[in-house]
Length: 589
Image (cartoon, rainbow, N blue to C red):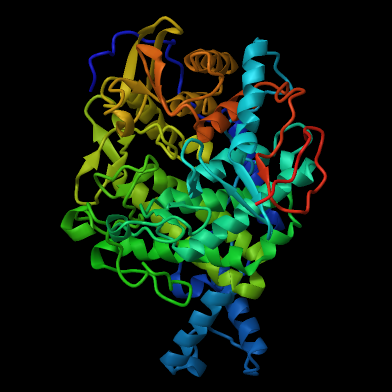
């Protein structure tokens, strides 16, 4: 822990347990979806599992009907009376039929709640005391990615780098455009109101799908292949487009979330039906399935896994055991080498990333059933739903530990062998962000976890006093310890607000974030709790986006009259913009 734990910036508030109205709304949404769905339960014949009724007689007859219909379609000309009847005395034929049913039957996807319950939006019903300076900062941070890091390319692609590093992170770029996809923005998501913004995000989806297909283990990419890598960099998996080859589970989660929110905003968008997008999602699901058995050197195979680095189990120079990482037991969760901070995992089942994967797999299942039947979407939906269930079970069985002071809490990392890392990291997915991500968390365990996070028992927790904010507490990341030992990350402060039910608390956090920007007008990566003028990364657009989202959840006065432009628009086709579009020039080269 740290020694600066005496001062506390704000009064402790209850953790973000769901309100009665939120719980009622979530239940109502799920019941309505169940009524609308026409479910065939054939996929459960082989596994005996899945969402839906638990009545064995109902399940028996639904399965019976599903098999009967499939048999008729196959032209077998036989009405199936009882599963396992004499007609199926040949067990091989029965198994083949069950496999066919499992791969092709429509199943119930994970119950997706959209939009997620958090952030709690009070923008159109709550009068807040936000200053003009805060509202101006919201507009600036909302458009910062577009104005400074976005390159719209010919061929319906977009490249969005992270800020002061000119590479595209799958995670960061999707997070940077997320405010454009928020369904609760007045009038609907910004991409649905503005064809130019829709073009930016659809281009990012297409370019990200290309990168996933190029190498699903990579996390960051270059815009072209002009960079010349040295031999040491090549040894670390870097070549042509690949800037860094740190396998991070959350990268694919962010891509799938971006795709899902875009679909909800623009359900008829052509990009949604492109085979390359389906393949990118399918690749990630197969990769996550394989990495459930990382210890056994299982790795994904098939025609979609033909990349230069895809010819064997993942090995990264610097990880233990010749690049394999620490020992790990099969838990149902899926393995990852690195955290969203880009730091190496201590134990390789990263619990918040697995929480995010459960949510993303629910999105993937729904997308697959709704959009991609011609590509084998039903099979993908079945795999995604099954994997989501297994990961969630793994979190419940291995990701919750007993803390001597705080009770049962979520661990940050575990290995399934009894070892766990108890902390939280500001980078998202974090344990704090579980409600924001849409994960169906245990409220008691989460409440205990949040109390742990904001205590000196969490090694990343910091508190202190400075001239800009007065008393302040929060937490940071080991990632910047070498630069600033007592670091707090603005994105963890923003997330504290995004998972809060309390408007006054959110407004107080927004004011603190404005002050910790130290007059620059932008969010930073991290700052010193004792002196926010000491910070890292002055140009970090992912953090900007989170600040803008937090402010927009409590006021509809952002972006106000502030207009956006795109830093480099290199596509000769320039769609019309909406009410916030500024004067745009087309760049050459």
